[in-house]
Length: 305
Image 1 (cartoon, rainbow, N blue to C red):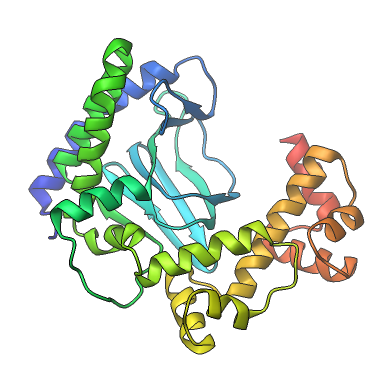
Image 2: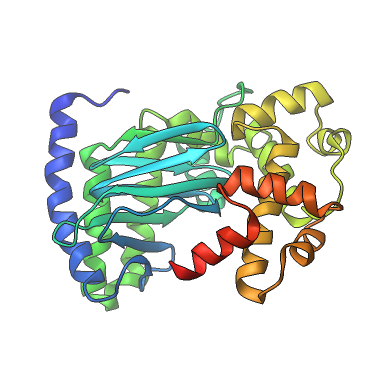
């Protein structure tokens, strides 16, 4: 199902109403992500274009309501704007930055954490028999249908009637999941929660890599865990994440090292050993390649910012 121009134009118009709601709920709270009284829901507000921020994203739906954003995974960069949405279906080390925002017209985003168990329940009722499919990429960007933006508006409006949240929010979130499953990227969403799908098997391995990222990685062991041959596992892993298992582990290690240096005031040598590197010089080279500057200079720049 491809969204036609008229339908997308309607969705863009609806985003004006959603932007007014989010602006009101984030006004005076500064830049960044803002949690809400609805547990999986958060809003993003940025008044200026931002530098790229790397982090490991869990499964989520992110709708651009005002402004434009850029997201980078490994070597792939995509820009998306009003009434377009990003879905991340597995834990991925993404880099994102706001590219269009002003104090008078800030970037505004709607973010909803995705729960595979809830998706699984809806899949069982709508289309349980999809068979075994080739792996699809673990993230995508699409144009939003008006029905999806309508759900986002109704969910956001519940923040004005807190007494209704417990009963109505789960229903609207369930409808959002349904809209995603019925949308043009429904197959990718479906694979998040389909038992035995290649994506779900890769997702379980990813959780294992995240839990043990400081330890040496053997692709043969991961392939066995996924019940695949090493070559098949490598192909499916790259199809879902756009990178190899070793590249994925390296990005997790470097992100963790940066956090250690920022939070614990550790130096590069301490951080390198804590995340599993045996050579400080090797760590510094890979850190500079990923973050654009050696550890000390990058951390100083982050603290100043």
